Length: 419
Image (cartoon, rainbow, N blue to C red; front, top):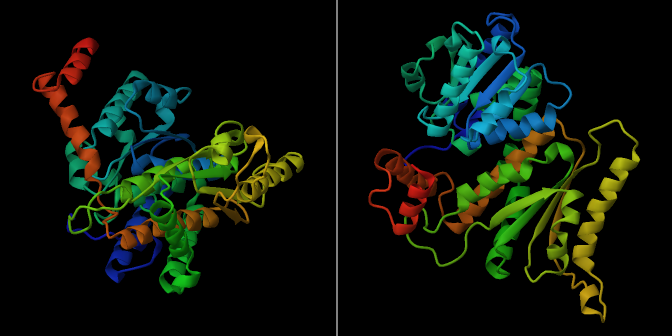
């Protein structure tokens, strides 16, 4: 709809040769930049503060939380929310003199990101940093905008215009985890995703994992009338995956017109939600087992634990995960309605060998291709997101003109807040 290519797979070495070559060149620039940081050119850096929102934050946050718990070379904080409490928490305990700030914005016009960046600069200045702009880098597809904003050209890590925000963790938006986890881990993540790219491209449809998952998604939304899909990570390292998938799936396929602009008369993306097992078992599984909603459930679990504690911890986790799927499927009949489990409730379990960079890359790419396959079969465009623009436009109107021209409810709220 915007007459632009969608070439995020080029960041993994798959796709148009020219796009792959460009991606490789920009990745080499990022690697050289990380080498410069490691060599001390920015002084004694111990911390990376990454500022972004949406895809510019969700991807790095997921990867760092999954892979960087015990082996991070730099203490890394990621902030996205415009609420000042989020930034205050992110910088707590950090030495401004030893902190590099990465500002991630594809267009370098994102209101929330730039306001947070300005406040971060003030934090550096108040902390005694004489040249705060000397500790800033920009991750963007619009280098000229970053230069206008005040960042030196040598401290900009560009990426291609053809990489969409929610598909951008593979490019320079991934700088914080490439720096913190090391280049080898970054390359393993890319190669894991590339392996899934090759599977998706070359495997017949009847054995193609993303395509089969997409067929199941469409069956449950269109034939069974399911309005939501629940994802539960039975691994603490993957606790942010449901959050990541919410944007990937709902921003991509939450559409009501075809790619040609014609109105749809069938459902598109379900509402994606979820949590972490076993916590979720004691919170929401009552509805999954005995509620009136039919909700397809996806369990994601690792065969290897992410800790060195008593193996019983992980054995109990695995047992609980597998038991939930069995209970949803089989149910248990009882003459007492309160104790009757109807069963015949769908679930899928993805069991990975371990949570490694390669496995995580493949897992994320699997969900990307699944989302794309859904979009193709739905006849919609998964690469635009105009639905997020109207609220931004209205917010600018309130900021510039106050309550003028709004409905009575919004006018009253603006007045009550003293805006």
